Length: 510
Ligand code: HEM
Image (cartoon, rainbow, N blue to C red):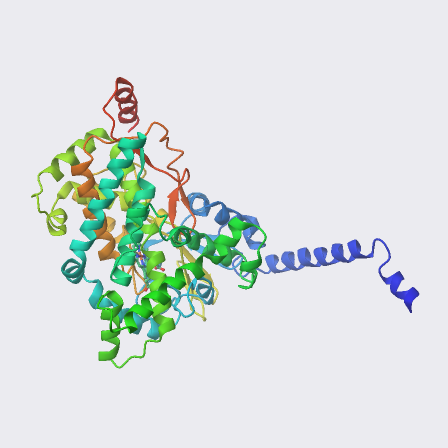
């Protein structure tokens, strides 16, 4: 018996077995590919057999650009993976994201969950999602946000700009990407907890783990959706620290949710926040909201409200400072605001708001994938039969780069939204459409308006730092969009002759 055992593992047996397994795997892929129910949809040949190329681009942060190029080659409907179809057809895009629950969030949205329970973004059940959304509605209207939160947001914005000015005067340059991230995280913690984490005061040293986790959690979501079978328990043991930090980021953010729940339930602490209003709404409607549900929603808010707004602010400063003529006009417009201006005053500035809309079109922080699953019984689109449960992929990036709707779509045109057509307004939806569209859009817009206006007034004549090439600002689209060089430096130093020459070159290129 012992002799037979030894024989079973004779040298060469294990490699042979591995080779057979590998060959069977490849054979299985080929057979599945040949029988692929999406073989009639245009797309590269390999997407019938494997998702490896799509996943490779997703990991690199350039899937958005790859898919966009595929649409240029193959048209408005493209197969991107064996069970996945991307579309840039406006009517189909609207149908996919419509209120009618024909297309749903898929079970894999569960991988996006970052707390112990579902949060709005990860909910797949239509009725539960709608009921949860109604609880947020009252707290997040423009009126409610202005009434309860505008002064506190403004105080954070003022401090942020002061910190930018100090950093620029001490070091020659200030990295606005860092400062906007601190600001956005402070604002969203302010709304979630009733007081901010004061990251602006401590340059993020206070709550450092939380601040880092906010950025890493998005990357963690990408990682988990790529390796769905990765057990959560592995995250603590992973040998590489940077990956361990990514995998543990959710937990760091969720712990903050626990603090929020404690504050909410502790009647001795009089610190109202948006979740207080949500709990009141739940009580009025006789809806039970568990602590785990609140903890998860808080975590979702902290994540969704930080890297998005800060990325938008970063690109708006970059796009503005690249065009000194535009910068001067914007500064002039903002200088006309009354000394005690409010968000409502800023909302009335035509140029500033057109620039905001154009920035959200070209550099949307959520330009990447937005996925739903098609109806079980399948559907037909312009003669193409799409089988049941096909994953339908859409991306904002491509929707707003449609030459038919946006002439010279790649150029930043601050006048574009002055005379926007119905078709342009229909497609340029930076906060999404349908039942899952952004619930924080009013907060985001208030923050963008106030921070941009105060920057224009207080940092007059700011210029991009000497290292700020286009490559540094190339937008990587992981979960959210951020600059490849992970910085956006500006300077407030007096102008030199070389600066005029660089700016003249940019103006000529523009
Ligand atoms: C410029 C800033 C922002 C942009 C461009 C943006 C964009 C978006 C988009 C496109 C969606 C829809 C995703 C989908 O259809 O699956 C979304 C959802 C969401 N956003 Fe935002 N967002 C921003 C800021 C914020 C802020 C400040 C918050 C809250 C503090 C927030 C909270 C959420 C939540 C909770 C959802 C999920 C809604 C649901 O599934 O019902 N977002 N956002």
